Image (cartoon, rainbow, N blue to C red; front, top):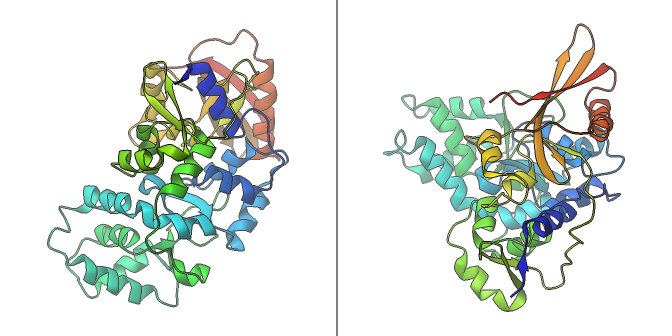
Length: 365
C-alpha cells in the first residue's frame, strides 16, 4: 500500500479544492464540486467561491439563490451550508441524525418532556403556504404552548422539519432573522427516501481525498462509517499516511506532483478546506489549529505555499470609505509581494468602492 507524505496530501487537497489554479467553471458547478459550502455568515460562501473561481462576481451566487438552483439550510455537521438543490434533496436525509444530535445537545434538557412529533407537525402546519422567520415560527407555536422556551421552539423546528432559508437571507452582507420555508414547497420536490451514503462518500473523496474514515466523519457529521467504507473497499483505492492511517480515494483520481507551486490564497472563516479533515496537519500545524479553530468557529486564514501562515480580517471605516486588510502572521514572510497582490484582489472584491490598505503584523497570542 502506497504511503503518501504530508506535502502530497496537501497538494491533492488544494488541487481538488480549486486552490492551485482558479477555475473557469460556473459558480453552480463549483458549489456541486465542493458538495456544500459553509454559510453560517452570509459573506463566507461568496469569499469561498471568489478564492477558487476566475472572474467570480457576487451576483453570480446571489442569482443562484434566487432562481432556486441552490439552497441554504442545515446540512453537513448540522451547520448552515449552501448546496445545489439536487444535492440537498438527495443528501440531506443522510445527515439528519447529526442535525437531531445538535438539537439534543443544545436543547435536550429544556425539551425533555416535549412530544417532538407533535411539535414537528404543528410547525409544518404553521409553515405550509408561507415563509416565516425563526422568531415568528416560535411565537406561532407559543400560542399553543405558551410556557415553552421560544429559543428552544425555534431551533427545534429547524432540526425537526426540513426547511430552507430563502433569499435575501444569506446573500452578500444581508443578516437578520432567518426565514424558514418548507423544502418541498420552495423547491417543488420532495427529499430523497432512504438514500445510501455511497454517493456522499464518493463526492467527499472527489472534493477532498484522499481521506480517512475519521476525515469523512469530521466533514459530514455522520458517525460509525467504517462499515460503509469497508463495503465500498472494492470500489476505492487505498493508501496510508505517514502515521499509518488508512486513506481512501477514488480509483481514477490523480495525485498532483507534490512539487507543483501553490499560490497565496485567502480563505474565509469556516472554509471547506479547514473543516474537511479529522487530521488537519496537511494544511496547518497542531499549534496553529489551537489558534485558528476556537470552539465551533474557524478563523479566516492566509495560505502560503499551501499551508496556513496567518489569519486575516477586513476592517471597514464607513465614514472614510476605507477598508483595511489586516493579516496577522504566525511567522514573518521573507517577501510579501505575492500576498499583497492577492490581498489587493480580495479588497477589490469585498469593498470595490473603498480606498484600500494592507497591513501585516505578528500574530498576537
